[in-house]
Length: 196
Ligand code: GDP
Image 1: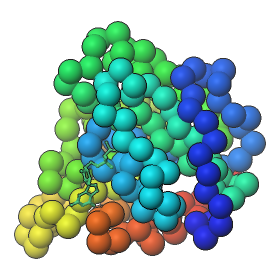
Image 2 (image 1 turned 45 degrees about the vertical axis):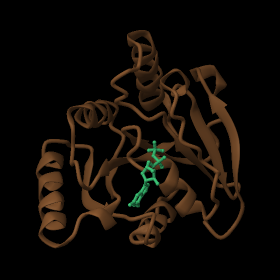
Image 3 (image 1 turned 90 degrees about the vertical axis):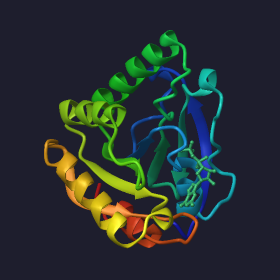
Image 4 (image 1 turned 180 degrees about the horizontal axis):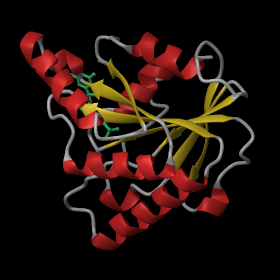
């Protein structure tokens, strides 16, 4: 799945812009700066495919990528910008809700959590939305190269505890480092294992 063509398809700002729901879809969500763009680039082996949007006003697009012609990989806008204007936050929440509840072909969400910081209140909000929309989600700890030994275990344990409250959560947590390549094959395998 990841050996073939991966391409940017389009950026979507409203539900009517979504491409036809004709293939398996997975989405990636996470706080801004969690390492989402870097992870998508590492997954697809294409540097610069996903670009971090560091402008709060520009965080609204849902970016669609194609994996071969069988899957969509969806990059949701990063959330949790302290400085984002309220109307931008509300607009994004509305789009996100519609997307999560209305996208029948969405098979799994990957919620990215910085291994150093753990699950924050904004992450909890996304997880609750996923519970309500009944979208199974898998948690990916990012930047694992920045936590070592006991701290890494503690981070995993804290995350596990947070997930216990979420019916839509998969118990398996994937620990990744885009820098070192750790966990990337596991994440690829998780996506490839999703059946139509
Ligand atoms: P996004 O806003 O979630 O798309 O975050 P980015 O992918 O732009 O990453 C934010 C920052 O974290 C950048 O400076 C990256 O170089 C850094 N970063 C991303 N992934 C890793 C990682 O696995 N390890 C380390 N040490 N830094 C990372």
